[in-house]
Length: 113
Length: 116
Image 1 (cartoon, chains in turn yellow, orange):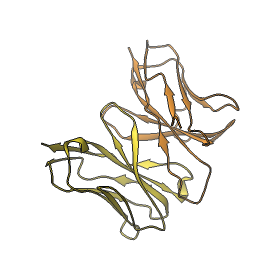
Image 2: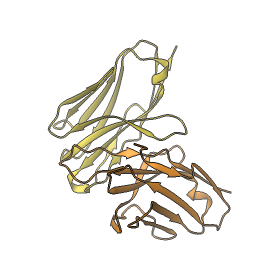
Image 3: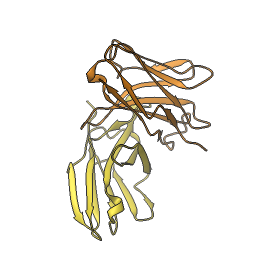
Image 4: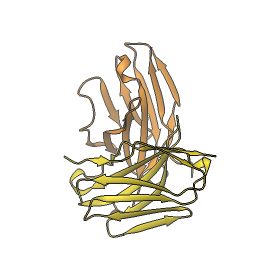
């Protein structure tokens, strides 16, 4: 059964510290992996998408890596700010599941000023 | 580009009533997906549609729930005879056709259904 796990479920850091968010998946035959941000009561905002053939993607202070052999993706957020407080979700799209995305449970991040 | 549009944003229904949730995909996107997020739970896939076709409904409850994506107009998720357990946020996403894995999903802001 395809599973996506995000640990920890919650994380609190002081402003300025780098954030490291982990995503583990059981099926390495992926098409891509996508990181999203969700603010309370809001929708999902796509942050980064890593294709199967890629090792990492970067956008501003965000960097996401993908290691299919170990079944892991990591989202790094440099120099965190209070505005980064949100829930971060990873989702994978695998060949066996067609076009469906399977989501992890998310990591709820609080950046304290 | 208006993105994925969902309406209404909030919907309150009494037990036994019907709920209709609408989703207009991004311009140029032909694939629509519905996901449900129960309180304090993750996002669960419900159904995947293309124009006039249901491609995968493996996540849909067997009864009371249906979805369509007509040739003209938005995709509709319909819940008949709602119960309190249907209270959740329902998200719609869209994507372009298959391009080899580079295409990502774009999500709407969701419809928050409350059953009283």
